[in-house]
Length: 93
Image (spheres, rainbow, N blue to C red):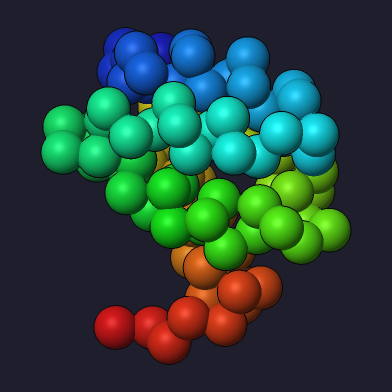
């Protein structure tokens, strides 16, 4: 059976910015600001890009993000767990 869930609409805007993430990670932060209160993973993405925006990781994180199936909540959660906890060093709750 095909998964009928849809990825949140704001991700369409973010997807376009991810192609240029290595050059302008601040654009991702600006685009996310309007979605922090309404979207499930927007705050995690905002924290992540606030941390890696000034590092050499932005291109890698963007490439991995673009490869995700954003309807797969477990895959999305795994992406944030990897980048926030394993790469950026946040302590797991």
